[in-house]
Length: 147
Image (cartoon, rainbow, N blue to C red):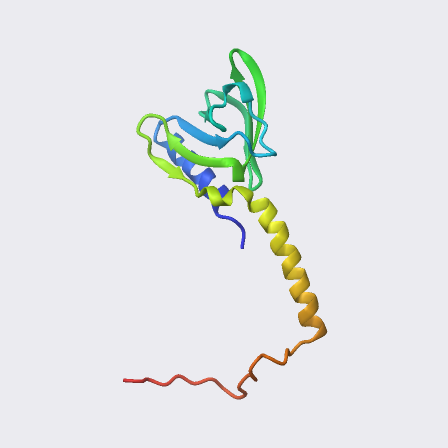
């Protein structure tokens, strides 16, 4: 099943903007695929003002959030994988959501899971009924009420 993180990021962003608040993204600036201005990062994190009035060319999909913003008057194109987004919240009241940091390496885990699934599928296809699996009952299933 796909990660819910990108869907929640988009929903929270839209909800914050619809309520006339300023959406901020807390980002892991040390994520290997994150392209953020490192000079503005502190302790491996950076807070980005993602308000529609502060950014240009905003694009959100299941892989990343990208946009252009100015830092010290200099335009910078940002690319933030969804796994690198630690939180989406409103600057005015702090409402929003923090995400579990264990999901930072979803991309790597997904690749490992896919490989493991392929190996299991190969083994299963070669031997459709392993010896240690109990036999499956035949016939129609039934439900019994036990009091």
